[in-house]
Structure formats: structure tokens, C-alpha cells
Image (cartoon, rainbow, N blue to C red):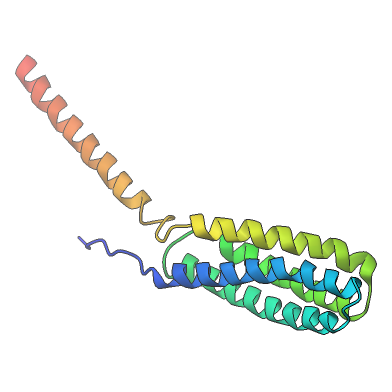
Length: 160
């Protein structure tokens, strides 16, 4: 019989750090764009650089999500969410660089909403949620079933 090992927590910590950074960068983006629209033109370059960093951090969050899923036996949702968010950021960056604002602005709203929602879910995720918590419950049910069968046999033997 193998003994149960607690899954490592470092992938979950990495996910939470990258999720928080992604959410903060996504929150900063509209302020930089608004400052540019207000007439402070150097903020356009800051908006572009922040977009680059946001793409990189979203990719790191996707890798962290994969580690949570595979190494820590946690949920697979963060890996998928941050993978999609990374693709959205790349498309968003391309639209902004080409000045296709008709698509850049609405997609920016989607990136912001997804980054914030995914960060909340990353902080709710637990290591070992997929396999580790189900195994002990299943083992407990097997033990209960064996006890019930043994008691039924003993009770049945005494009744005869």
C-alpha cells in the first residue's frame, strides 16, 4: 500500500503570483490608454510596453497553471484560462500595433474581464483538488462498505 503524499504547493504559489501580476497589469492598461487620449502622448509607449509585459506574464501564468494541474494535481481550469488569455493578449497587441481600434478596444475589455476573473479563480484553486481529495473519500467509502458487509455477516450469523 502506498502512503499518501501532500502535493507540492510551489506551483500554486507561482500561479497566484502570476495571476495577481496579470490582473494588476490588465488594470493599469485602461489608465495608460486614457492618459494618452487625454493628451499625454508618452503614455502610448507605456501602454505598448505594458501590453508586452502583460502577454509575457499571461504566458507565465499559463505555464504555472499547467504545473498546478500536472504537478500539484490541481484543477486544469487555470491552465486553459491563461492559455486563452495569452492568445487574446497576442491578438490584442497586434490590433493595437496596427491601430485597428474598432477591435482593439472591445478586445481590451475582454482581456481585462478575463484577467480579473481568472485571478479570482486562481486564488480559490487548491493543490491536489482533483485527485488527492477524491482518493481518501473513496477509500473511506470502501472501508465503510467493508465494515457494513462484515457487520451484516456477523448479524446474519447471529440471527440464524
